[in-house]
Image (cartoon, one colour):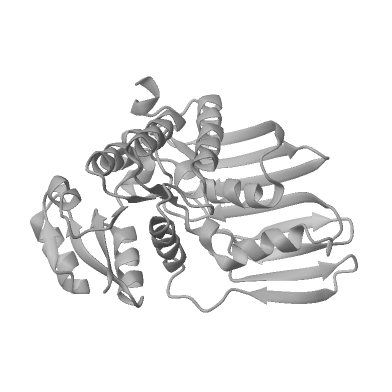
Length: 326
């Protein structure tokens, strides 16, 4: 019998999840909800989804659904996730998890109170090659890791949701979160200080940023993102005996190890994937099978920690969302 998933929202990222699950054995998107029944019908027809709703409340009260994937704009994640939790529905919520750390804390507190699973759909955290990169960085093969750089930039400033503060827009929550997670996976949590700079859009959200994080043991991460440019999306981890080059930090495809003389030592490739979304789906049902309310790939505490970093950066830049005042 297939595991049943409902999708809340019918935008671009929802299509990617629907396609992914359609290619997975043992899983099924059984329902989709959109604000428009026409959108719900069109989406459902494309993927052979049996149920379609124009009410989010109807979806979260559907007894057949075992997990709800939230694919709405950042500003709606909190209310939609809370709706699921209060109806005892497990949640996989698209990144960034919420617009503020306070919202994330409230959701996790509610999940604990009700004993309901919830996690952030930051797909990079669940990928096998991501785990391998962390292992390689700490294996001694490049000596002691000291510096790290990571970038993710796409020319997407024409997307309305990315330039509106009321929708949780800006580069940071949409793509800048990936370099932050990349640094966290390699260097951990012990940040001693952070220095950053930012360019704002005319609408007052962050468009381009450079973030330098200084970790314990003389380690430095330089991270940047932009909604104006297209970058190479690389991550480079450097030690005293060599370095690792990671292609495509949000969906790593290959990690190449070089020695101190720029000689290629080895290459480590990601396993063949559908889209990369399948790993987070599997992780959710693995957690549900043992009655857990979180997954070890991205514990609640880590989501809150990253959200607090982003809150602090936005405050420094003067980028404010409606939820900051609540």
